[in-house]
Length: 491
Image (tube, rainbow, N blue to C red; front, side):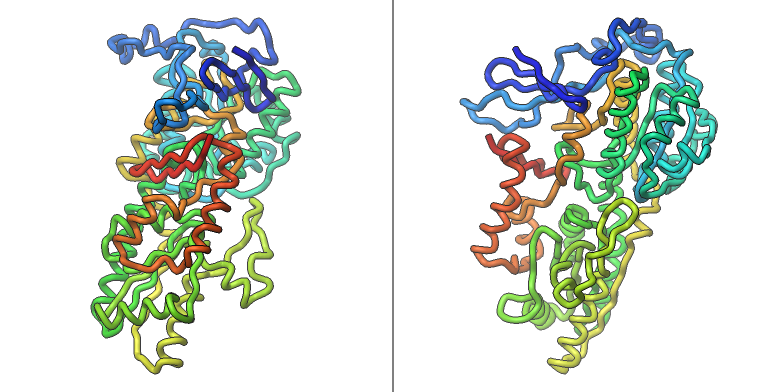
């Protein structure tokens, strides 16, 4: 068995093609650290749990669909409590920060980190960093106690506030040292976690006994490897209200059309799953599947056909869909960026609504009644539902277990239904996208009975583009039909 690695990931090679993509540990750069018995040994809540502590050799495979002659493939370290920890509970001074856009479940994650540190490990010093990364050096902090956070899961948003950008590595790590913080919990998307990786590397360079642990957050579900991101289930559920309203409006008018724009900058998972859940959607448009308006097989032709057949229709469009069409009309479209480096998107929902009106009312002289609904900020701001609350609890508890066990430079995530620790670079190296040549998209097309808007050659080109990136990173094609993860890979 051989080992190789870098600051962000240790790769351990074993027999029969076994590969462990392991997370860093404090002892990688601070040898001979003392260990302590895990306080959970005497915790009455866990005294009845058989084999509660995770074996150090337990790993979770990235691929669960294999052939009889397949190699064992990539594995990740299984999450959970260890028999020995690398922190004395009285010495722990933790902090929590939330960055990026809002997402259902943020407050639940904050609550469960605080409760897990206190109830499981007896840690009572937890700081909340207000306002995202800027809060580290702006001296904005709040003492987080179990009593303070007890009911915050019932509210949307984040009690700590959030922001985009503001990442200044030196100032952040200086602040961590000044406050005597030795566990940093960072909740955010790929941009936030890229910043977390840089913070970890600077802490390692300085030789500090400080754990940096992340919990991946994106409402779009566009983080790779993990089964799904927290807040996704809530977003799909909440989107039903907007779709139902659009359907009622469309059904109640002659030639009624309801257009609903949902989140999905680069990935159309929310739109796809909301469409499948609704059964009232006639057409779903996502960034991964290009479409066109005019001509045979275009969107206008399908809208006209559906209006003649049913008298009404509902269109769901992800915010990142059709941006190339807007860019063709506006040379400035897509040239601006927000503080996180994301390109500012044009309002495709408003654009496509105007296009449909112009085509049918002005060109075809066909009266229509079109209602456009954009529930984006309503969905982002709601509290997480029951499913996401459970998921947030698991992520937070696993993250705390990993930090106490001395792991660092990692995120907590569920892979194939198992809790794992993932290196930062695996979470941030690419985006999770809907694969339109897989069965889940075919199920949607069968449900809506919409055309694909793509020729056979177009589909082949999209397939090759999506898979060419994945081949460099993963194993075989692996579709998770329930959670929304479509992990494209090949050996």
